[in-house]
Length: 405
Image (cartoon, rainbow, N blue to C red; front, top):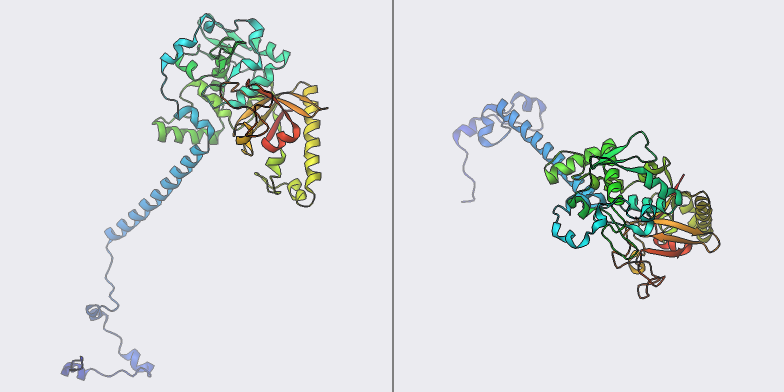
């Protein structure tokens, strides 16, 4: 009636255990053989197959985690890797798009001799190699640089070209003449009439192809491993080299090797105010001593940075060194017409006015150029890829200066 059953005679015959008497408890251990029937302390032996299955599942989970992390790392690397754009966004070449762009000069290396070689002739194509092209523009802005390019490319009787870079004289690169597919992707040479498709010959796409082949053949081990995995996952080919030789020019998107390959000299990097200090003393890279000092004396540190750049630029152009500028930080780029994550050639500097003359390797092929504000017109009133900017404004927008050592 109350929910409890009466004890059976067998239950009444079991000895009582005094929980307060340790001896009594120890003298009557629980019956482990039958305890499992009531769900208490059941310990069944585990078979070897069960152990093996558990270990196998554990290994599979570990492998799954490793693969997941690896794919995530590669995906993050690709999404933040501007060099990947050349290999994955441009896989088809509509040859018909080239028909209206060719003329008789397309088969000529230097149709106007040394006058074909100039910064204004350089127009970036679909390969993400703005650092290489900016360095090239800085080089050909010098009379000695134009002579160097003229002598650097040697046409062979079999239709190939041998390119001997000044910084690697014992490592000449021989490449075939660029195909129509390669010319579709490659940089172009605009002439004085704005003819974007090789109006000044094919010296630039040949140079770009040779540089790409050189970068393919001289890859750091860590980058080569990442590219093998990246190409394997996304293209089905486990090869560190780019799909086309000229695409390898994009492998220089994160370094200043173009200067070393051209001249044998590296480049020194100088941070701008926007990169090192930011707006509130919090820069976009590592913490520096100047950044910490700017917390209590910001203007003094800014003046120090200006003076450092002024001296470095004055010396660089006195000794005809190569200089480029980059916009990794992307600060104030939209409203000023400057492109983010891009490189510009620095063609000149005035110490008196403290103004830099910059050249965009995209030239006037895109409707963007430096302007004082989003509502203003182009700073110099024309869209040609070249403009002047004060050192102060330069430090607000750009991230780094790279100056030949």
